[in-house]
Image 1 (cartoon, rainbow, N blue to C red):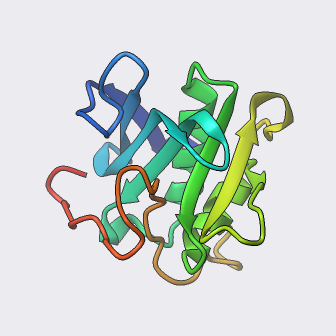
Image 2: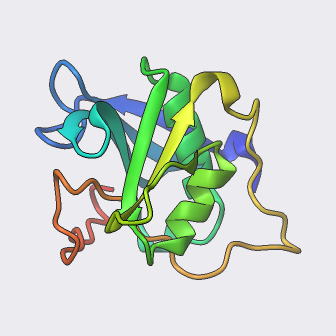
Image 3: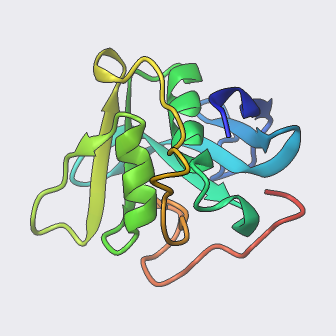
Length: 163
């Protein structure tokens, strides 16, 4: 897979999923087919306060292929926000690896229940390539979630026809 195979298509978004004046939403496409969705919402949540927060959801067949890291990278690059946070469960290692490959760095305090990563435009990598076939991303890539939208114990429903 090459980076040219993945693109974001701007969408209207919905409430809590990139809709509204402060939100941004995109459909992730891989080789012209829907692979998932990514969106940014402006939320007010401790320990950061008001901030842009990104969430990404991939169809099951698109997970583990490097599409998530490209989705994070493209969304942040195309966003109007210069600083974007990703909140996710500490156990969500695949999504954390994808975010880190896209330029996110750890910003969590040890006492926090969730992992908190931050992306800053000036420190973002110029490009993000998917993993080579010699070093594939392993395991499923779970969605990054903001606690403002979903409690820790809930997982979003699988929506392959819409993601």
